[in-house]
Length: 180
Image (cartoon, rainbow, N blue to C red; front, side):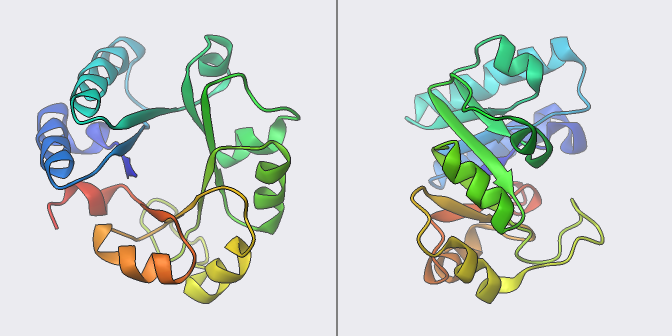
């Protein structure tokens, strides 16, 4: 799962990187543009959706209360929002971000379709957050009923190690758009 970074890279560079990643097999994109103005984000989301649809992939929108209320069909709940809800949102596909056993337990109770767990390694997205490492990751995901993607300082190059630790796949921001 590639997590969008058009705000950091610029729209043109991001869309070119997205095209490369899709050509290399990426099939799931989380649209996460928290600092982008709403109209620009809607426009970009349409472009991302068209590209991902063309290869049979899936786009999930990093949600806030507004996205849920507007009935988005594929949403990703950030950890703070996941922790604050008591019931699964009515979207067709619902995932969430977790950082510990409590978050994973709550995701299980809500019957989410997938979760991201991390940070596995140190990452600039969460400076100062302690990295859990692969051993802790493996212990936390053992027995989870839904796919768990490893996140935090990872790229597609980490897929074999992630799968060996019980991950369904890997997710990331910079590592997915850098062309490695």
